[in-house]
Amino acid sequence: EREEGKPLLIPVNHASNKSSGGTDPTYHSIPSSRFPDEQALLNTILSKTAHNIIDVSAADSQSMEQHEYMDRARQYSTRLAMISGSTQCKRVTSLPTLTSQPHQVLASEPVPPSDIQQVTKIAAYASSALSQIKVDAKEELVVQFAIP
Amino acid sequence: MASALTQGLERIPDQLGYLVISEDGVLASAGELENDEHAAGVIMRMVQTAVKLCMNGSAEPFLKRMSVVFGEHTYMATISGQKVFVVKRHNNPQEAVEV
Image (cartoon, rainbow over all chains, first blue to last red; front, side, top):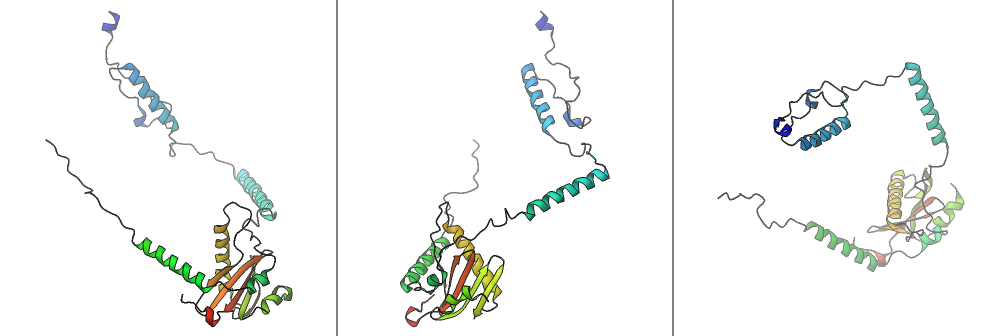
């Protein structure tokens, strides 16, 4: 009997969920449905979302004092100077040594003309093949749904 | 001009000019490539790209020399001791190619 007396639609009276803004009307809870579990689930989703959303306009900025700001700026530039001063990361794009006899390598036989012709031909084939890439339309992009 | 760097290059048969380039700039230049910083820049970038293409994680680069072949002449480049050596050589008549 107690169950039967209980109203199906529970009147909504909750305060808005824990959002940083607080007064944003979109954060009011969802009116309940016939299934209390579903409402609980929906409210969980809502509160999770509200918790994850960062309302930039509503957030109060962490302001620093002027001298704190200057100190920190000085700290950072000191650290940067230390890093850029060290030669550690300088030669990241170093040139690998290909030979210990550069003059000999550069003086030796040029590439045979047959090799050049072969490479040129292959490149021409590749270029031609590339230019022939096209879309092969098999069917209409837009179709009408037949509604009987 | 560092003669140790360039002596060998001078003596290359049918050479029309050469460059020795480090990552900081041109160390030596002569002939048709004398003071050609533009060519040095282009060739340096080509070499750096070629080297990247070859190094697929293995320790050994498998290119020894890069050749840029034109109708009448060819640029050849290699790397040794952090320096790029470039020579511009005339193509011999029997080796003249249709590019």
